[in-house]
Length: 76
Image 1 (cartoon, helix red, strand yellow):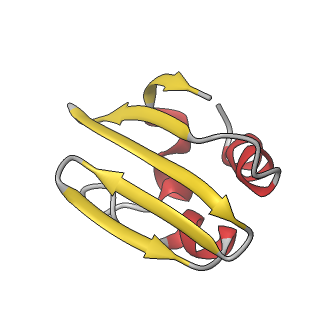
Image 2 (tube, rainbow, N blue to C red):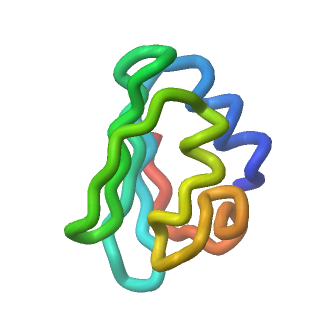
């Protein structure tokens, strides 16, 4: 899945995005256009925009933009 596809899905606010990255369960839950819960393993953050979702280095020090083509077991 490309970073552009992920961004488009999250911008639609239709449902969460669940996936595995480097052996950890990760995800993004778009609760509102300015409220996104994110997690990777036991680490969690809340951000206020899709830009922050794509550019937060929550995923083992990487951003979702960087790892989009490396994530596995995607559920939308």
